[in-house]
Image 1 (tube, rainbow, N blue to C red):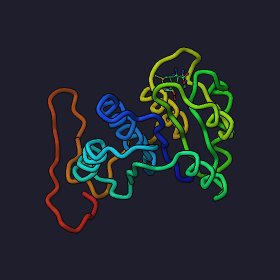
Image 2: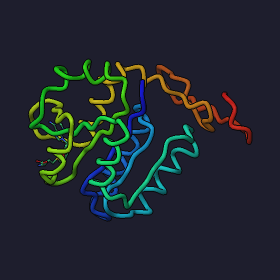
Image 3: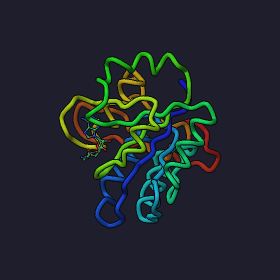
Length: 185
Ligand code: SAM
C-alpha cells in the first residue's frame, strides 16, 4: 500500500485540541504515515502526538502544523498523489474503496472541523462519505482507514515501540522494552 497522510482542516487551538489530537492518534494507530494540521500551529497537540509516538513507536510517523492546506493539496496532486475528502455529502465509501486501493497511489485524506471551504470539495479527486449522517471526523477517519487497510492495521505493533500490549481476556499486560537501539521487541 502506498503512503497515506491525513490533512486536518479548521483546527481551532484551545477548542479543538482534544479532537485534533484524536485525529492524529487515529491516523497513527490506523496505519497512516503522518498528520498535517492546516493553517495554525498548536504545540500542545503536536507535543501530545509525539509523546505517544515516543512510547508506542513508529518513529516515521510525522506531525506537521501550520501548513497552508491549499498549497499542500496542490503539491500533493502535482506529485502524483490522490486526494480524498471525507464528507457526508460524498459517494458511499463502499462504492469507491476498492478503486482507491487498486490505484496504488499515495493518498491524502482530508477531514474537516466546522464548515469545510468549497475549494476542498473541488480540489478533492474523491469526496467520500462514511454513511450520509453527520458524525465526527475521528469516526470518519477511523472507518475510512479501516476499510482501506482491510482491518490489518489493528494488529499494529511498531518495531521501535518502548511499550506494547499483550492482549488478555482480563487485566492489563504491558511490556516495557528497555533499549536504545530501536530494534524489534
Ligand atoms: N458541518 C460540517 C460540514 O458540512 O462540512 C461537518 C462537520 S463534522 C463535525 C467534521 C468533519 O467530520 C467533516 O468535515 C468530515 O470530514 C467528517 N465527517 C462527519 N460526518 C461524516 C460522514 N458522514 N462521512 C464522512 N465524513 C464525515
